[in-house]
Image (cartoon, rainbow, N blue to C red):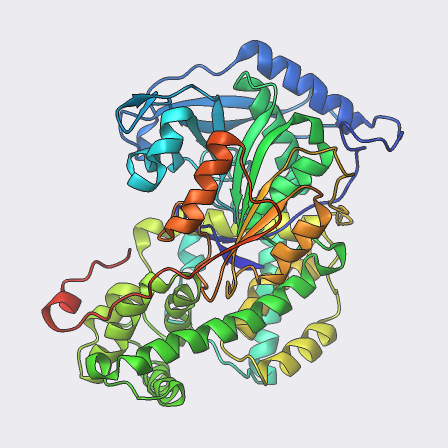
Length: 533
């Protein structure tokens, strides 16, 4: 499922795993498996070794205030004495003061931004932001790169130059010839993943959850305080199911639907529907500000302006690299974050005036980012394909996505092509874990969700709320930003602070009014916009 990591991170997607070990702390009575024993042993070793903090590698591009280290985990938890891989970890220590007052230290808060394929190494830097200062005063802020990501035993499935090759087409209603071309690409990509990565089958969310418990032990924490966004919520829910007694506090920000029947094929279909709704929200905003952009006074007129640009790019790519595929990828971000709206509207307006420069700056591939993007996509694909069964007959994909594209053309087929390697995946598939805990097994947890989130539709938060007794859902009504904790909504941030700092939650549920919509930018201000946020 394509989804961006929350506001604090890079783009990525969602996924989970199968239960091949009895949940720690559960009452299942199932005998321990080799993976269960391997996790316990790895955690014991990590607790004894700790983490040696030092300067961060230059490749991490982090300031001196952030310290880095590594944690060793088994590639295969069934063989804890076998091959080890190292996960990179970053940290800033709690400042100890907020608003000029001393603050008691509450240990570490570990953050996962989602994906799979996104790195959280940058997370400690958020402590300087006003929205995070109170939390940074009480907690060490800990980020890390999950297995496969960045320098943590990285995965790669193809030459990065091929991954970012441009321009490309992205037909909303592909013909038979184009479908056959994408099938061939998906098969080639799946073969490349297997050939380049001998340990491919071990890159799963279940192992990510085990890695998180080893990281907890290495930090010297008896219980984990964790915040996950997007895929990080599923990741966290799996951890809570497997290790409920190891949980102190957990925040699930923009929750994935954890119902096993949704993982992952159906979740992707639902996501495409939600993106269509959010795409309409963007167009309605542009129409409301027609005096600034002149792209149309109705969402339908704005769509025609967009389609005109798309058709021209199919004939003549902007700057030689921005075709319909790059256009679609750029405007997909408008579905994740509404603070992209002024930039994207300006780019369309300028292009139609004869100035393609803003669109090229916002949509053209960046060669210097190719390796990182290819790595993120490789991890995403590996985890998603390993974690759950997928239809292996393209007729199923063709039937379902052709029907859906009639009512939700914006993202449907692009989403399908991203996941199609899973139809031809060479590694063994797992069965999704039935996420959930018994009443009282888990401390109270906090779920944050925007009502019109496209990447993780709101129904996912409701389902997670139902499956975790004692959890409380806080909703940002009428908004659609993906990843809302520590963002623009002070009401949401108040609930986040109250929970992480005091363990305090609303009695049942709570709702926050939406954050303010962005203001349009035009003229000189629009011309001075940064390339990206």
